[in-house]
Image 1 (spheres, rainbow, N blue to C red):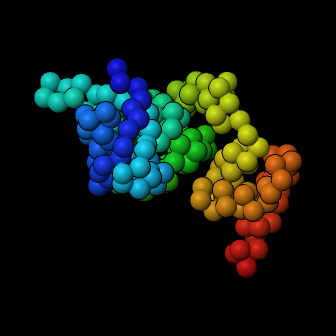
Image 2 (cartoon, rainbow, N blue to C red; image 1 turned 90 degrees about the vertical axis):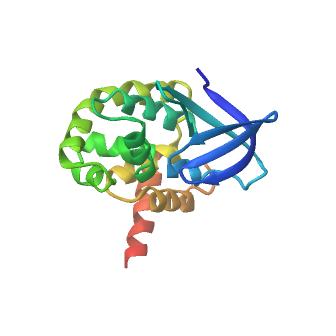
Length: 197
C-alpha cells in the first residue's frame, strides 16, 4: 500500500494531480478540499494517499492531511459508496463539516453534495455514526485535532456556520494562543454576530 508520497507538483487539474517523485510521475485524484491546500506548480508537495486496485486499473487518491485520508477510507466501507462518491463528499464538505453533519444528523447538508440523494444521505448518517468515532478518537491521541482553535471552529460549524467563516472568526479572536475553547467560542460568536449586522 502506498501511504504517502512527496515530490514536485507538476500538474493540478481537478480532480487530477501529478507529482514527480525522483523522476517517476504519479497520477492522483484528489477532492477539491485538498486542491485548496496545494502549492504552486513546481513546488514540493506531500500528500497522504490511498490506493484502490481494480481489475482494469490501479487508482491512487491524494489527500492534504491524514484525517482527510482516514475519513475517505471510512466512507469506502459504507455500502454503496465508492471512490467517486467519496471524492464528491470530501470535495463538498471538509472533514469537520462532514463529522458535524453526522453528529447532528443533517440530511439536508449531505444532499447538497452532487450525486448524494436523500436515501444515500440517510444511509451515510446511520453507518457513519459509529464508524467516525474511532477516526476522531485516533486523531485526538496523536494530537492532530486537539487544539482550542480547532475545537472552537468545530463547535461553530456544528452550530451551522461555514467552516471558512468559523475559522476566520476564531483566528481573529485567538491572537495570543491563551484562550480556552469556551472563550474562543463566545468571542467568535460576537464577531460573527457583528458581521451579520
